[in-house]
Image (cartoon, rainbow, N blue to C red):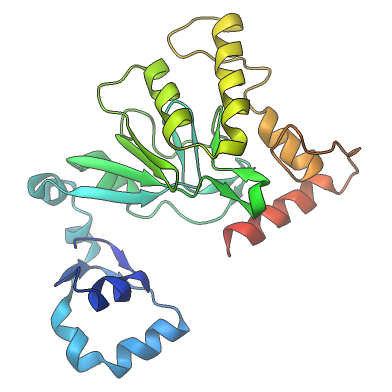
Length: 239
């Protein structure tokens, strides 16, 4: 493994003999992970090498090794644009880190996200992301627990169909299919169809009702709805 940051999930790979060695810049274990690391330090020290970020994240090194890179998306839109950092486009949940270095210089760049959060009230896949960290030209493969969408050499409309079919949770498939079909009827142009009046409808619904799903009971917004919705999303993202 060649990466910038190693976390607790590394232990599962080691325990199952799926990983022999890892190169990283930082070890960011949880409290339990730290206890295990220091307890088994004599055994584990032969499995890690720490390199400065100037080497680990160096675009030329990443490109020369032909890495298959995997990064996490906070949300992705149906055309393959990825938001890795901002909740509702305005509240920073985390920094971008080295994901840009690894994504743009990879042989194959993969982004992963659970299809839903907060018991289905939030979909990781939306018509248009509220913030773009990685655009559709850099995102080659999208993965959720529902499946894998290989976006390479696909047109925008082909990417949309694949992401909806392969990655979106069943409870949101019809909603996103309806948006995509509607956008093709009303869009200014058809290369990347969008209805700008409806592109952020799911995010607005989340702010107003606490859910992105169109079947969620509408509640009359109050002055505190936006702040409370942001707090709920932050709590979900940190779980």
